[in-house]
Amino acid sequence: MTTSQRHFGPELFTFLRELRRHNDRDWFNARKERYVREVREPAQRFISDFGPLLARISRQFRADPRPSGGSLFRIYRDTRFSKDKSPYKTYTGIQFRHRAGRDAHAPGFYLHLEPGSVFAAAGVWHPGGPALARIRRAIADQPARWRRLVGGKSFRAAFEPEGESLKRAPKGFDPDHSLIEDLKRKDFIGVARLTEEDATAPGFLQRYAKLCQAGSGYVRFLCEAVGVPF
Image (cartoon, rainbow, N blue to C red; front, side, top):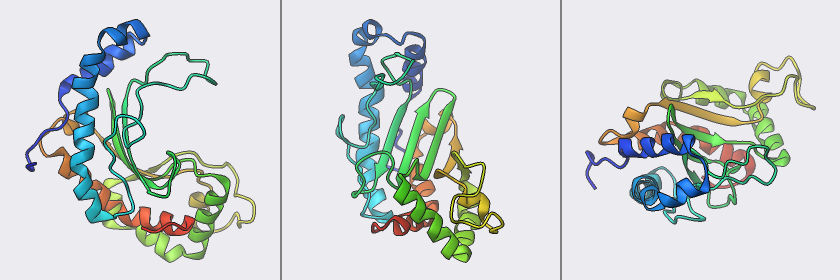
């Protein structure tokens, strides 16, 4: 692997655009080999090559290139409880989750590749009730540290906070707390917006690794809050 290596090509986004227009099983099955060649295999190579770079940030997160059950999200949508019965996701999602986490709701690092929406993310999405309460309590108990993390130059240069928030202060917290807007959050995610050109450029792997490094202090805080090692 060299720093100038390119993992993703424009054909990945071309395939996903076409899938958005033809989201049905007959169309996809007729082009399954193309999906594997242009989308799945490049993502698996990216995951494999990111493994050593991720280990430099923390050895508590997994870079698992398996096509099912690993870091790569399945292309198939779960339509059981959705009105939208489209069978396929029209994006490629890659999550480097914590070894102690069983699903997408654990602290980790994420890469989203979708036509018109490319981004890197660090943090925890939709944590369960106990974990959410522990994160809020950690912020309230360590306000100076939290401010340094989210207000630090490297984090602010890379990430913007996103996700859902409560309209009112969570139970047990002072509505006048100086960090009440952070305490209202239901998601603790920093998002770095990128472009298709960024993702298909040589050296994108290293750029993504630098973003993860910039978000590592934030993820460390969340790991400590929910009681898992970083």
